[in-house]
Length: 194
Image (tube, rainbow, N blue to C red; front, top):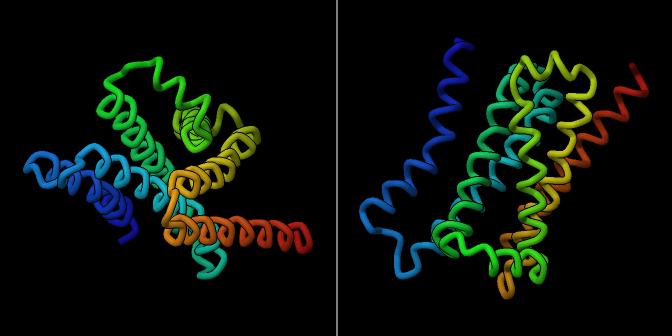
């Protein structure tokens, strides 16, 4: 039964991409298509960050190690949707016009922190294979703790982007903080009893 879980999680993780691809192909993105794609991919990046961070707490709560098997795949989907989000901004919104993009990175804090979050994801994606885990050994875990910074940066990116409606971005921020605090609590218990 376990062997079907990973393909199922993979398929479910592609549904948001299929959905936005369908909406793009059939011209169902509304009056501001680029804005719709940007917000959609950005929000799904945050959702996958939350899912990735929830695997260790779920392992602890359910006492089942199966959740850890999905963590790397979910992490790669974080990178996938974050890259789509960035490409929408760089390619569709600015048409690869680098000067205004660089101006945004320097002058707009939400663009700067969003870009920083994506840059931190790059080494995580590159080192996500089992081969890299063996090669980096203990350093692999240290490197992949960057996901915590990515999570905070991503939620701040959403909060700072939202000039009027703060409720939804704050919900993501609270979820991420709770998941990070839960991990600290787990690690403290492991140190105490380990």
